[in-house]
Length: 321
Ligand SMILES: Cc1cc2nc3c(=O)[nH]c(=O)nc-3n(C[C@H](O)[C@H](O)[C@H](O)COP(=O)(O)O)c2cc1C
Image 1 (tube, rainbow, N blue to C red):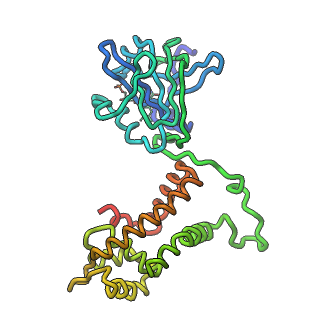
Image 2 (cartoon, rainbow, N blue to C red):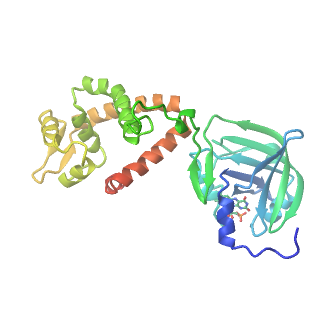
Image 3 (spheres, rainbow, N blue to C red):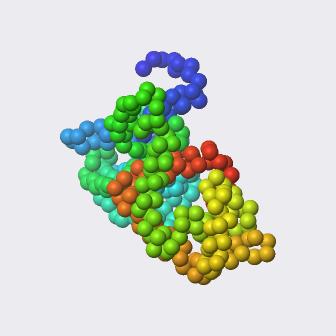
């Protein structure tokens, strides 16, 4: 190592390191008095297969430094995509990180968290000083894994891991150069919507509802009572022309009641019908998610939400109220 540290721009250096996408882990152990300790760590890495070794590094400023230095055992939890809140909690100082968190006892009585993509139970093998961090190398004594998508950290933010398909980078040749093809966003969205709704439509037919009536009915489940302009906002660009007719149809069937100001709410019959449709549509969704994989589905939802917001920033306001 050179004697004088190179004069880096610290923020730029951090940013460049952040280009390296990682998973997110929580490392746990117990202090001398037996209290559980843990923190969020993305410096985890594999070292050796035989013997099985892994490493991670801990900032010297960490409250848990002396505890991990003295610990004979610790566990690495590779977080699943739905454990972002847990990651946030274990990255905050001074917080009672384990409050309300269910743990199991691992090797050396190390607290083990549940619902992770993988867990490695380790015995401390080596410790090295590495600048302002201490590097811990552990021998893996036991591990387990689940088929859950991992949480990802990239450029200082949480991200999704999605598998790439060969077709992502090589769309099929179109007959006419520059014509619409499978890489065209409009085609993908339209085709996806039509195919999804082809599975939901038989349920609507059973309830004798048109697509527009279903959109309106499901919009009305967002809040106890929706003002006319809220309905307009929620369905803008979806069923502008046919909304009035859809509302009349739902009203005449006793599914929706409309007051003098034009505000709407579901009647008990309307709520029951909406609940039947929502649970049936959710069953269709879960079949699709089973085929797609939970991680891919979470990534798709997050991207579609962003797309909807880009196309119409007002939509989110209605859903978040
Ligand atoms: C995604 C992410 C990755 C992190 N990786 C590390 C790491 O590798 N090493 C480290 O010392 N701190 C890391 N931290 C910061 C610690 O989690 C944070 O400083 C924590 O409060 C330390 O807890 P303690 O002081 O109670 O030990 C990370 C935080 C986040 C959000």
